Structures are given as C-alpha cells and as structure tokens.
Length: 66
Image (tube, rainbow, N blue to C red):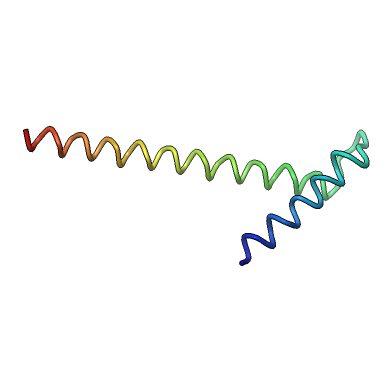
C-alpha cells in the first residue's frame, strides 16, 4: 500500500513539474522526481541482474545433469 501511495505522490509532482512549470534552478519537487526516477532505475537494474544470476545458476545446474 505504501508503494502505491508513494507512486501516486510521485506522479502528481512529476506532472506538475513537467507540465506546469520549469524554472532554471531546480526546486525540491524537481529533486524529488529526479531521486525517485534514479531509485526506480536502480531497482530495475537490480532486477535484471538478479534475473541473469538466476539464469546462470539454472544453466550451470542443467549442464551438470547432462
């Protein structure tokens, strides 16, 4: 539930930042959006890395069975 609320807050601030205003000096809401996007990107990289690790383990195990 906390993830959904956090994501909704992110979307509202992101829409406001991108569509309504953009100043030359970033404010707190723009920094929040940037930090949130970096966090999402790092999470996706972690998921991809984990998937490759699992795939590698499965391939090694299947080669040992043959």
